[in-house]
Image (cartoon, rainbow, N blue to C red; front, side, top):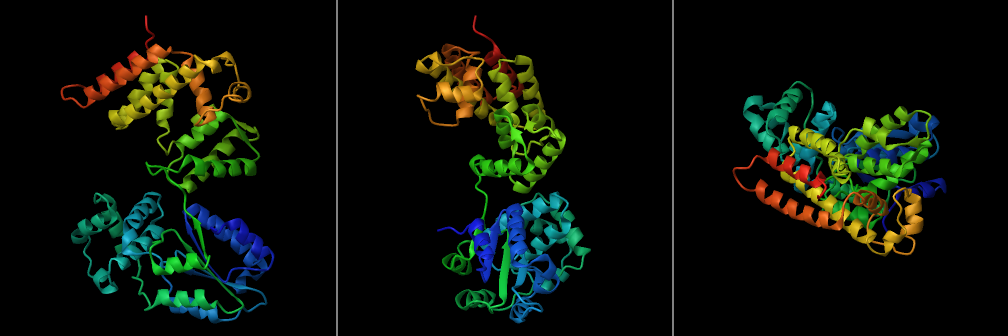
Length: 438
């Protein structure tokens, strides 16, 4: 059975702490989990003596092991916390590490980016001697290729690192074997070794040993095909934040939050903080609040375009289209979501024209829709999405929506043919989708 944070915390409360634990995955969740674990393992009044903290990219394993073998000054558990433990990385996941370096650098976290960059160089086989001979101009192309960058960020990162006193980590021989020894035989009775890592290679022998001993807490976030946070995985996090803030949220506003989430849970956390501050003491968060405050990080922009199409609001749809095209979005990237919306509307229209239409009323709220329309006729998919589909489908006939699918096919052909202006092709499509049949 997969290890989970709740069971770990419950065992610590019962006086059964783990002697060795790896916490890895999403940065935000790793930090939150480690803080929760430390709050129980080492009471604040004992932290000056019974907690030692190491940066795994800078500290040698000999230092860490010496700390583990030294009894605590005060009675109780001594916890050795290693941040950014590098023992689970390998050349196979250097692509992920390169992406993380660039992300940290773009967020202004220059020291964190530089330390992860040095760990990446270490995995690539760089030595301190080789680094000392680096010339910025000559090495930029090599570093850019390693990071998967076009060269601009690599040049800035390299220049920053050259001006700092960063040192290449010297790996002690047999680090993995020494960790496995602790896994097999346990730490001294007074010790807990807590390792945090954002990147692990699950194929390494060391990681497999941690899994085998149920000493790895995996907090990786499920992602969709585009790399964004998976909506199903993000929903519980959103619900938890709402409970903590004492807020409620409208169904449509909830869908907008999920659509606008990007790739990093920490960024979603920050955006929700802004949203809670914006609504102040009002307990209900509305769609207009999300639209006003929440930064769109997950390409939820397309929601605004498809919503305008569903409402047959030609001016709003053309305005959204112009904004998206001006931001560099490719027309073909917009065509897919529009087609998905038309198919959703057609499904809703067909259901409305059947038995479910007898219970449907345009003024229905979402709870009423669930109770009266879906109660005896459950359908697959998201119920709220279907509810919004019913509301949008009121603006169309089934024949119009079938015609719109033909228009989408024709538009796809025009966009892929030479001699057509993509902007004009897309504007024509939007106008025709919003135009009612005579």
